[in-house]
Length: 108
Image (tube, rainbow, N blue to C red):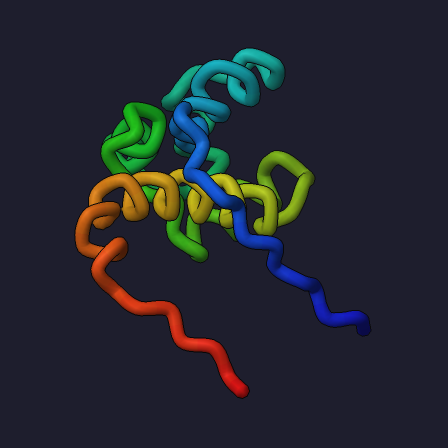
């Protein structure tokens, strides 16, 4: 299997990536014709847990990604990548000043 290369972006995008809960709330659940109660039952999680994810107040954990991937038929990777992009963008914004003071070291 070929190793993926990471290409650093010179600047953090101005707009935050969408939280995976927003994708669920705005696109997935309506497309499936489900309300929160039905989706929570299908995912085998509490309604409160699903509400927190839909509101963007709770991250999609690897365990929840497995549930969502099975439920939606698209696998867990998509949900983890959405969450990682969201988390990374916010971390870079939050730590921007401190990270500027960290030197970059390169191997010889």
